[in-house]
Amino acid sequence: MSDKWIFLNDRFVKKEEAVVSVYDHGFLYGDGVFEGIRMYSGNVFRLDDHIKRLYESAHSIMLEIPYTKEELNQLIVETLKKNELHDAYIRVVISRGVGDLGLSPFTCHNPGVIIIAEPLALFPKELYESGIEVVSVPSRRNRSDVLSPKVKSLNYLNNILVKIEASLAGASEALMMNDQGYIAEGSGDNVFIIKDGIIKTPPGYIGALEGITRNVIIELAKQQGFDIREDVFTRHDVYTADEVFLTGTAAEVIAVVKVDGRKIGDGQPGEVTKQLLTGFRNAVTKDGTKVYETSHIQVS
Ligand code: PMP
Image 1 (cartoon, rainbow, N blue to C red):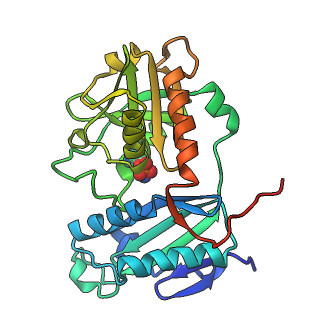
Image 2 (cartoon, protein in one colour):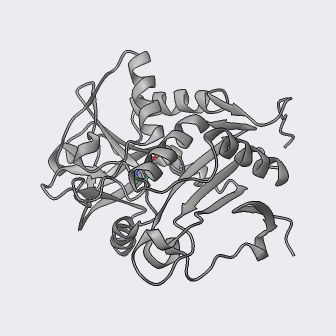
């Protein structure tokens, strides 16, 4: 049996014993919300922002999380400590809970709470140096007036279909357009373009999640004196940009050097992207919640 501990509903259980009912509406209908969070060197990056987004998502779908924000914060910290982690990816899932086979969430009386923390599976370091290739895909982003991208729900089928299309095209990520053909985001990341010194990222209403990494990059870019705007753009604007990059909790800040076979700029990660990645890496160990009293010195 592994020594990995998962927080499940109201207690810690071993990974092998962390199972949920087939009647859980999170499983039956994707009815629930989640967050992906990261800890860097004992620091949970922007934990409060993630918690805020989780509670807002839950409130929007009338799902009451059975813990206060402070309690959930504490449970996340305890999960990290119990698994003796210093660098980790944390997944918090709140499901509607067990009900009957009907759609109604009102048959589910106890929301499920799951916290998983695992050692970090980083993208290969080389990808941050070389940049990645992405493709635009046929599937469109869910319309934001139908299913708001601000709700980080367990229903990720839109994103999964897009991921399949990217993989079939041999690319590591996809660019999704909305129903009007404006670029919305990646399957699990936000997108930025830079042209003539102006940095742009699509506004949330286009169909983009207002990512926490995205917000950090907007703040950083402003601090560094860049002209950064939330604005709509098309595939043509992406193809002809000087630099393109993606942001996300898992992806961090990663340069895109080719889109639909078109080289971006000179085909190398651009200077502004590199500068923002450096700024981001400096922020991640400071800007958040310290899990341990004393800082952890990594011995390699
Ligand atoms: N868009 C989507 C669809 C995502 O799933 C994610 C990952 N949470 C992001 C953007 C990036 O958001 P964040 O920076 O908060 O991880």
